[in-house]
Image (cartoon, rainbow, N blue to C red):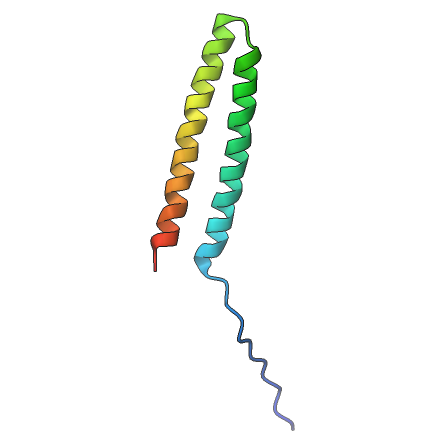
Length: 79
């Protein structure tokens, strides 16, 4: 009975971190878009309560953005 052929791949194997990094990059882009939308809402809001809500939303999104950016940098620094 013939032996099954072996397939060798000399390409780079995807690192387990690369999928996490990709997810983080996608979240980062989505968060950046949400920040831009919140700034647009802030610029057009007239009611003081609505303005305040946009300020809180922008601050929360900026904190999330900082966290995602920090995680990406940690993954890139890992061996």
